[in-house]
Image (tube, rainbow over all chains, first blue to last red; front, top):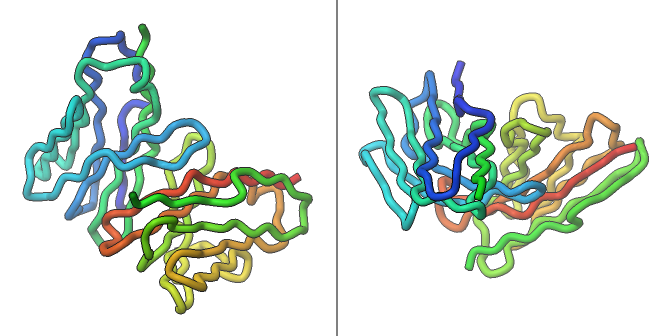
Length: 112
Length: 115
């Protein structure tokens, strides 16, 4: 069956360091992979989209990589700040279902 | 741009009552609206997809008679949880897409607590 795994339920890092979050999937051939930020009690906010034929995408302090051979995406936040503390969701579009499939998310805590 | 609102933001109701949640696209006309449910520490799960003026398409395992979706206009969709029970307590989130369903704009969510 199709599966998305965000390996860490929680990640704690020090301010200024780079946070790296992982998203792995099985039994999918996604055309797009997206990352969202979700704050407690709020809906997801779109951050970045990367297509299957793209290796890397950047936006300010954010960087996403997409390796369709490894079936993995890495999400990096450089120079992390306490305000980056939130849950980050990976979502795939494509495969046998024509809709967005979400991972459970990784809760990032950036300590000052 | 591309703002989606939901109302109410939270609701507490008694078991057996019905609850209506509204989802509005404020500054664009949405071709498609989506309803998701999220339990604590779980992923968003798609419940149904709706297009204006047509019947919603429900995901497997979602009871269409229990979760009534009305998409009356290009800017408004409603989800009614009929005869709510405590197990329906969850965080309900809607989203709307402008052109492609790949790009969805999410609402702030509605917390439902059924006592």
